[in-house]
Image (cartoon, rainbow, N blue to C red; front, side):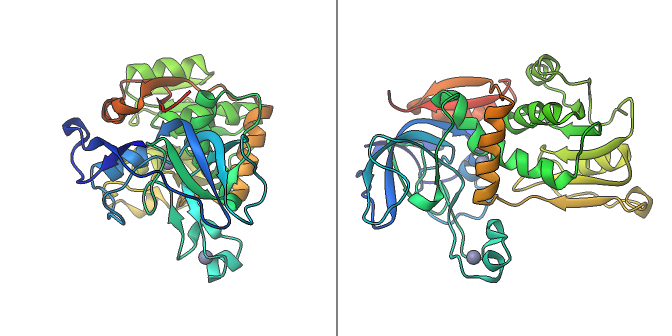
Amino acid sequence: MRAMVLEKPRFAEEAPLQLRDIPEPTSRPGEIRVRVRVCGVCHTDLHIVQGELPMHKLPVVPGHQVVGVVDAVGTGAKGFKEGDRAGVIWLHSTDGSCEYCRRNSENLCVNAKFTGYDVNGGYAESVIVPAAFAYTIPKTFSDENAAPLLCAGVIGYRSLKLSGAARSDGLGLYGFGASAHIVLQIARHMGCEVYVFTRAAAHRELAKKLGAAWVGDAKDRPPHELDAAIVFAPAGPVVLDALRALRKGGTVALAGITMTPIPQMDYSLMYGERIVRSVANSTRQDARELLELAAEVPVRTAVTPYALEEANRAVADMKHSRIGGAAVLRVSE
Ligand SMILES: [Zn+2]
Ligand SMILES: [Zn+2]
């Protein structure tokens, strides 16, 4: 099968992914094989191809926002049959037995495996996933429009929950890529007023179109103090910008998997019971809730399609904020 393979991490502009013909994987007991139609491009993929995360497996096929069709079912795999549409996300599997799994925090599992990082992902014609970690996608979404929901949407949704934002709250979104453009729609549906902090022209335009009450730079003060904020930008200094705009008792949730160092700050920025918390992965429950909620809103994802072999260009375009919304790879019909 055709796959875009990472053999050696490099800058996105140096085309780190190579088109290769690799053996088609086979499903073991409990697993299904999904013929990939579309795979979304996530910021985590950028961090992986550039070697900004510790590498777990090389060579590796990235990609963890897969929409495709089940074409093989391993013995004992429940919930899917051949021909069903299925979605695959970042959380590939957990041990189900560690202290975090037992505490209902499987997103923090000490033996978690991640799609496109610990195991090969969806920048390929086929991907393997345990049936218990695959998702049915609501019919309202096309393959392309569903793909960004599977990580940008799920992680954004978990970040929104952890930010504590509630009806009529003012919510700040720092950075406006694939995840924020979905969160904005959900937050508006919840009755939040949303302020977007971003510089990129394509991002500002999309934020306004989707109903942002105000758009500015990270250093700007929004018209009202924020009740909650989510930082999507992987830039530590932005955490301080968000704290400066946050009311007492408010929360700043950090959605990214990595970030440049957070600068030293005066205690007064946090005093007043302000909370800073990170967001790590997601649970299966988060993914199910998000898919249901996205269909109810309904969330309209903005997608820019690329061919599988254009994955390097898709990742670089995302890195340089050249597109509004999400990049997706069209893998097969
Ligand atoms: Zn565990
Ligand atoms: Zn992701």
